[in-house]
Length: 227
Image 1 (cartoon, rainbow, N blue to C red):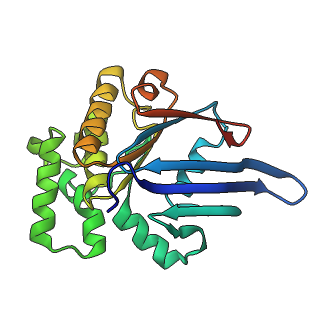
Image 2: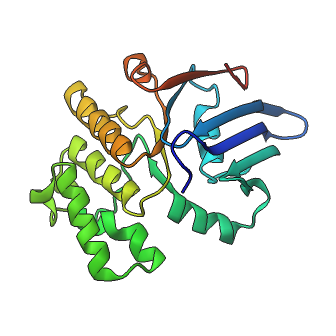
């Protein structure tokens, strides 16, 4: 783990194009971004500007056509999928606009899922999961399935799931976009508090400028470049 204030993630000259050779759609055009350990950065921009594409590349859910993606000094852009899968599971937590909870499992089971995939010892994993759900105010909802939870509660379960492996980086794509103001503010406050207590780096895509201005830094994606 890097010391606070040192680079955790660095994207260099990231390019991404979709479409065909005859009709290319250039989404990212040489993006450069450095994220420090413990830093919280908001990415804003108009719809269709490529914010989600950038977040997916930073989280190794997609690969760039060109450029480097350095995590603690290792270039992940050249790694095989098996290595990237381990990296995503261990080092990166994801929260999306939709919670993506598995409906057949309880809140606790959903939170434990990344650890189960990684083969973490069951007793230790369960204790961590119960503790996280307590921290997000859901200790009374451990055995409830997602359909029995409100939208705000579902997103708090998703936040706990994102943190179960104690990642160094949390990526959030419009985490409050589907919530009412009160629930959205609660999720954001929890995200902020937990990230600060864990010295966790956060990159959040949002259209909410008030939330963006509450982060340590705000960058704007326009015409495929960050400003």
